[in-house]
Image (cartoon, rainbow over all chains, first blue to last red; front, side, top):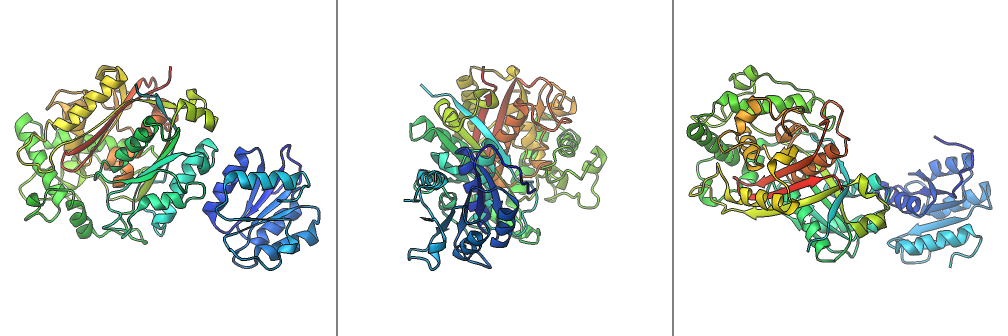
Length: 127
Length: 402
């Protein structure tokens, strides 16, 4: 259930239409000390972002209705200060990536993802 | 010297029908589900094994280890697929233990699954009869339509003739197990109850499976979809996972032994491999049958339940069925045997069965079984998982850490 109260730990929003990837990413981020909200579509993610004090968004690029970069653009219009990290299995550079604050290729080592997340939360560049 | 190894978590699907769940989805759900029990990502797992028996013949899918490696965080790790017929799940757990003992890693996941029904939950009995028959010696298949029920019908007849047990004595095992399954929400037959009269009367679905032999429908286990998984860890692994030893169960003894595939020419009522494996597991644990008051045994048919009761040392050869008739196998009896409902009522998703036996015993020892089935004073647990016509055995002895 959505809540506007701010948790003690950083709150991350993960968006992916792959339920297994979403569950695994939640486990990884929880174990690293983050609170995690999960959304299986871009629209649901936008709603959660609007309703919660999210510190960082991690979105898969290949979603059913909208791409992760489209979601990043809309999220920046909604909450410009919340960093958005895009995930993708695509090897080539993605269109619209300028709206995101970072990019991580799918299949990355967990430490790499956690490193990028930690840097973005500190306001540092992703890489 | 073996390192102590522990079960840190257990997770299973409801046994019965997985409907449209694909094999990759089943494996992924099994791995992520058990990881969620310890709130650790798959990346924290070092090694894995997966057991299944009918993946080629019913699912047209091989190389299951690659599906485990497909789960994010599981790639590029030592993972293997195990097949030992109905003992594939137990073998998958042993495979993980062996990897941990060899120093390959500290945390492992063992998965077992079977998808025996189609996407609508229906089964093709003739096909299943045929493919399960592949787990018998080719010389013993001729003239048998349902090879395994036929082989066990012969074993049942032999048990009754040699020991003087009755069809009613053996049917009592099924009756007790259906009663247990009623309280196990994950059991396939938790909405079905049978009386001893029903189990014995030839009426409705209950019929003699092979003309001239005593095995009836209610003597048989179920055709089941399901998956189960455990996380096994060394003490170092538990530290990495952040799991307290007190929340775990030690796999204090474990052993495997396989007898020749052919049934003829050996004593399937006292299977040498099964007894050898169980004896070794007890010895490794420094325990004896009297210490055990929780057990899960491989009752693919009621006669196997009787023999299993004997293999774990709770009854002398020929007295296994009587143990159940006398109420000693009840939840509050001398030893709570198959409080899960067993293969007959919990269900028998072949590759998952061995994992679920150890998993259920884990729940019992941690006091996490449903309250109606929870043994009040669980001490040690024994498990006996066997594949084929009393052929390949995996036995364990489990206990709470000191």
